[in-house]
Image (cartoon, rainbow, N blue to C red; front, side, top):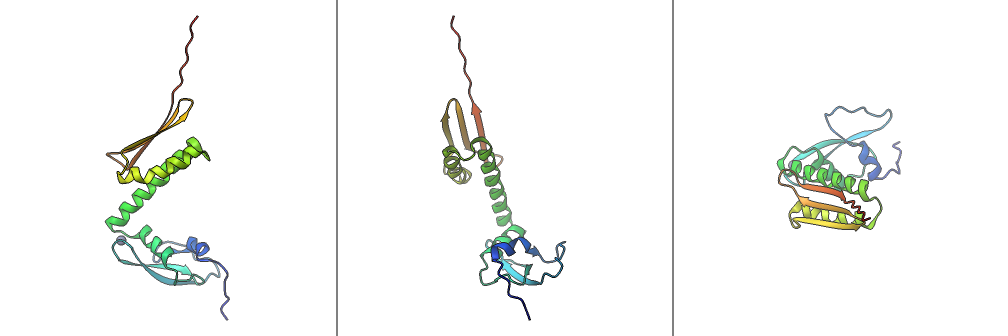
Length: 153
Ligand SMILES: [Zn+2]
């Protein structure tokens, strides 16, 4: 008799692997083959998923297909996602948990899409963050601290 697993698709997704790829089958884990279409080109890719994976909710599989598809559109999507992630990380390193980080993250995609050419957030005390479009890549983030000292005697 097959055991009904309570694991959710979100937990399962970490175990999903592209079929034919190098992966180690976990001892005792039942895997099944599932297919998912790339949402950009429609090409179907085959994956190995845990038996408890609910294939009726295929949005996660569609995400996986986009991660692995070899079409130009999915490659472009992955490059933009990577730029967004690394910019978010950079912002967190500079302003973690602050309202500046929240506002700056909201501006990432408009800058990447070219809807905003450049945006500078003045955080006060000489600290500024600039996000701008990049001609070579997708986005350029620059954190600057201006320190001024003056003495009159
Ligand atoms: Zn594709």
